[in-house]
Length: 347
Image (cartoon, rainbow, N blue to C red; front, side, top):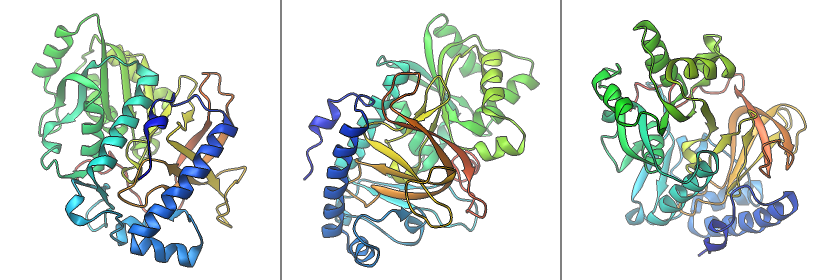
């Protein structure tokens, strides 16, 4: 079994390009051997495509890929999907689940601090109905909820603001930093627009962490800067951090720094594949390929997404964090539409 102790005592953005490349080359090779030995379908894919191929995320919709016995699975994660769409099924054992939670905590703490803050979730508690079978939406809420305290759900089952709960939360934590969490479109639709319609403001300070669902905001011509300004205007929150992640690599998220760059941590990395040749190392816009050192219960360590992105630099972001940083433009043309908050009605 791989020994993760050294990785978790290292700062999540402390390794330069040379050190991180050496670490990832070794660990991804060992993860590949691990999954080939324990996952028959992955072994056959490697035999056909070569060692350590970048698996299209869509494969997890079409095949059961796991590297543990069925009896060792403690949680099954599912991606979002509209009616009629297949969903990814990601199988977690106890060790992988704990490892992903630990990595999520270390990454997020680098942006909002280590103290557990009072947390307001821009969602309804009804999404967490079956804790053994989680949608991407429920998994995100549960994962980030572990970083907060006094967790309060801002919306009722009808997806309307529960002003009784929200007002009580605001009053209880007035003058102290709090943490808001929600999926991007839901924060916009069910918090910002609802507050604007009711001509109300929230008197809060602290942080908002949000991710997913930019397609709908793009359709509404709402960009990142307009989103940030509106959140601050209506809630008082100024520390706003978008993140990029997927249920297929839970935990190793890419957080946005104060300069608007998505950062790869020690636990993950990113590359851009040429959209025509599907070769890595593309200098312009292309398919986003992400790696993660965390999953041992399923072969999700190297994944080719359906998203379009571009590398912006490495080790030289003004925020001071080492590693690659990039931006994402959305789904590649023709890619299947999916996303946690784009399909929020689906549990």
